[in-house]
Image (cartoon, rainbow, N blue to C red; front, top):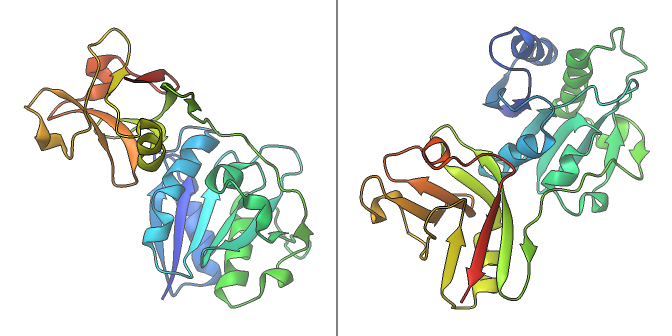
Length: 256
């Protein structure tokens, strides 16, 4: 059975996500739709790309991933489709996929041709693109190639010989604070050295914990989550509100 994942900023209080599902199912109903999230902050491409990046590889190859975040980025918006790592991706040409793949330009990307559609609403365009792929059409049959897709520069950690300045990119449901620093980059820069992780006016964190239970209940810890992003948490607590940490704030790590 085909799988389609949905990542949108439609929210869950309105009917927009249901309309998208209905449009897709009306084209092909023998499939499974998985909601990654409909609660992406409005127009937040970084958050939308973050959600997709952390789960798409967990799905079987051949899965189709729909990203509908900041879809109306210009009056004549374009929808694009491409294949990467055995997965298909559909979404607006607004730069979200360049945040997902640093080397997006190496992928063969096609604009979704909407000339035969009777409606130009977003749900119908996405459903049409999904149906083409799910019914076995080649990407070349969906629309013309795009040579230069829109690019966005994601937030990157600033690295020097003795310091990393990273940014909080996400606060999850448990109020764990997720930073744009992955384990391999941290360990490469650390090179076995001790470190001090500073945030606001709190005492620094000086070690990486294996799990939340590695510290006492209520204690602050630094760990790497299942996607290998650095995370500041509190065992059995809410790090964001208790520590006053929010998206886009800077975290500093000094190597000793």
